[in-house]
Image (cartoon, rainbow, N blue to C red; front, side, top):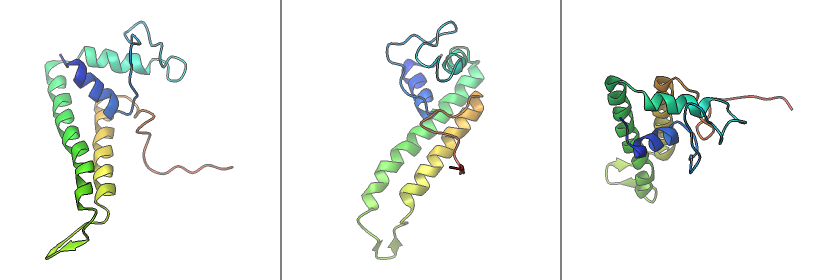
Amino acid sequence: MLTDAQKVDVRRYAGYSLVGDTVVDDYRDLAWGWVAPALWQTLNHRLEHLSAAEEAVIVTYLTTLNQLEAAIPASGDNLDTAQAAVWTHNPKEVRDRSALFDQWRRRLCGFLGIEPGPALGQGGLSIGRG
């Protein structure tokens, strides 16, 4: 069974905000009932009823996502140098790392069978008419 911290990371990486002291189970979805009915319940139910094989996949996703997330702010160490000897800084490093991180977050959502949350969105481009 996933730890509470792992469940928080799954929700966070999937693009959903914190739950706080709101009880989310198969019978209640008070925090998000008006905005996204049953979404929290679905995610919570799936996280509470994983097979051992599914849990192993989730843990692998979390390990990868933790590493990718940590690499984004760490890439800030290179922002002050454009070139040093033969090494040349990738000026798009933060953007590229963020895109890779979000791609893996969306893969996690796909495995979980849920839509990416508001903090992750659908990705891509959307065009609207005003």
